[in-house]
Image (cartoon, rainbow, N blue to C red):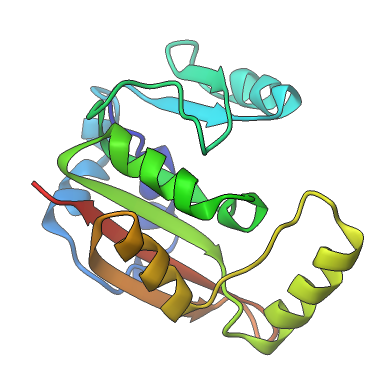
Length: 178
């Protein structure tokens, strides 16, 4: 199973945003390969899974689950994609260890999230911590590197980029050791 639909979308819509080159991911995001892949997804909110079911093909394996307790077997995936969810996770170490667990040796994690290295993101983080119970915290580039290393990932790349003058994201690729 390979979760790469998001990778393909980013690659097709914003190829300039993928500043690091990864030959395995480059092969995986090629459109003809997507038709041959088994895709899976997990979300703790049933309503979000309902939206996904309406938008995705029926063969996509969608399950209700928290990132800290993924309902998949050990070494089941070649790629895990996490997009704009780490700032909601109360136990980031546990979630990243779970992502590491479900990856095959040599498998990749692609994680994109808001980056508190940008002033507007730091201010938003403070506001959301006070007024949004779902929000936990944002991380900067160095803390993200540290979290991935502590979960056992080798860092294949980490990049920050501005969405506009106010907002920024970071994307990292970590690899499970063979």
